[in-house]
Length: 180
Figure 1: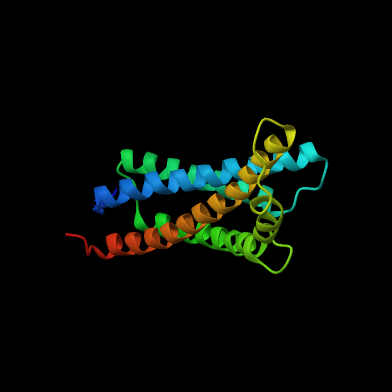
Figure 2: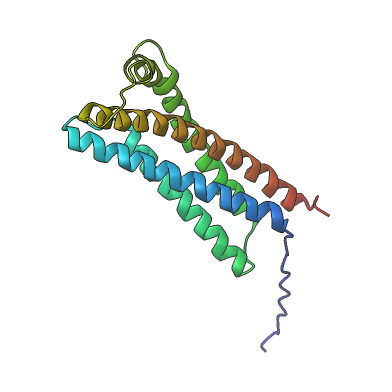
């Protein structure tokens, strides 16, 4: 005799706050893309100069690419109504650790002891401004651009790290159903 078994499947629906999720997606996509692009440009400059590429440039290119892929995954899961807080918390935590590690290294390189990027920018770029139509002015503009890119990438790394922490908190709140 065959026994009939009835399986009841309950689908748990999670309510994600639309505005917060969209703002997070846009800002984190911008942060990831900027970090990816600036570090890729740094790698290209190092290659053109014929000097070695420090480990944290390709590290940030890979981490920025993972951030972009994470945003694409969240958009896909949101569109198919399959975005679950556990996956978002796990992905955000992994990226948070990666971003925090890179942020610490960038801050050491940028703001560290004598010989840091900021120290060299102040000494060799900001204190020696060139003007007019000359190769020296063009070289100064490129050096100034590199200095500004370092500061911009640090800012976007900081924003991305904070936003990953925010996403972990938001995913936990969605899981606990504390949004109205």
